[in-house]
Image (tube, rainbow, N blue to C red; front, side):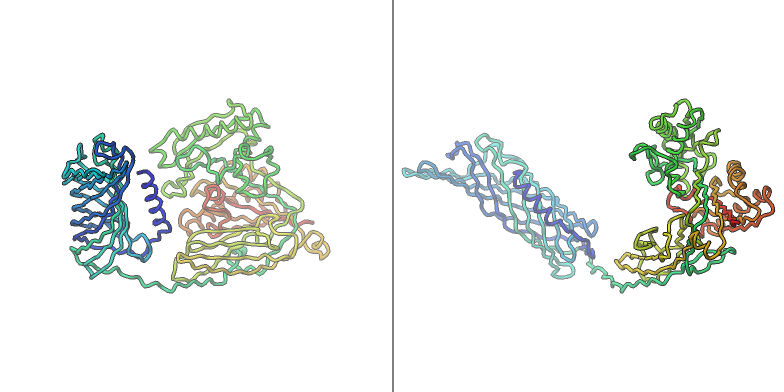
Length: 636
């Protein structure tokens, strides 16, 4: 039995392999007649009392079946099929031994009740259905005739009841059929199925292991009870997609877009201050940080972590927050911190203990990987942050799933400063890529790549119709050459369309030696980012004021030009965010001007029109709530 079941399972796995959904065709409820022939396969091991040798015997014979059938569709895929009929499992079993032939004519007739599940529309454009269910049989006639023939005599026993016969036959039904529409509501369905018995014919010791399986070949003729309507065939559109040449631009001093005709790469003395976000972000419901926002260097990387080896990239720097704090506490053994775990609005209702688990994760990481004295870390389980992000926005509320780190020692959370006498910076520093797509299809994804000398230097991708794609070119990201920057943009649609366009932007490279040879002016650039603006707030924090006092004011000379750019994340209305960004820039300008008066200030409220960081990530949105300050000082 197990061998046969394995064969049937393999057969059905083959039939279902490669299934493709197509235009669904749902039949109406229908009833009718079924009938056909069955190949009855008897498998026995008679014990010998009926003049058979005591060993296994198998035999096959033909029988017939007929009855009534009703099919009741649930949807275009599933149909419940009920069957009531009469089935004959007749079989003739013979065995010869010692010049004696014994023949049993077994008559096993029963009323069949079969609940079946049919699966339709599984193979593209083919009206085939598959079936699986049970066959329940109530025996009506279980008798046999025995004839024993030997050279001396013929012995016959007729109409003998099978002893200890089972009162119910149970079998598994598996098969497939094909639908032929004779009319809109009359259906002819040839069908093949296999009945695998789960019950024996008899419990008698003389009839052990008498099983009867059946291979059926039949046909169903049914009539619909409701009007059948042909499925509506959709007319497939001729989809098209055109990608227009993009507008590649930058914002001038008056925040007006200007075309990028070339990128100027210049060697300068450069300093950049990168803020350290004092938050460790966690996925919803988790007590381990999100891997896309926090790298656990001490656990995952070989070699000792070093702050001096961090790249000049704000996103990457802030993915090492725990390791930066661990290194600093290792060097400042008397410093202490407080870690407060917080929750988003959903977690507050379901798992308040999660806040303490988040704080404890931070503490255990610092103690276990950097040997920080546990008494120097106070871990607290809080609730909603005291200064939360927008809980009514999904992107904002997930930012509230975090651990907040505070310290009385300013050295622990101070910004990262990277300075060099020879850095390559670009003008413009931010390039906006706006592309128009005309299509009668749906844009599912897009991809923008920038190359120089065949090497990919930056990449952006997204879903849906692309908006303004901003590229903030980092220091030393472009080569020290006149090699142009190549770009390639690709869009893909729901129905398989793909369109790519490409182009180049010239590069003009100015080294120190070229500027000296051509007697061109040189300059010192210092860039500072303030990131502790609270959500939806233009108020300059005390910590940012201390950064201005300690780092920015000393970098200003009498001939410096101070450019102040205000930014926001993408949460909220764009016009409102532009106003908020302007207020943030003006707050910084007001404070700076109170300290340094006789210099030139330029103020720009950018808002979210230029995304300087990836706003799909919590860290990127936090870094976008910033004011960036450029102190540009000509060299004498």
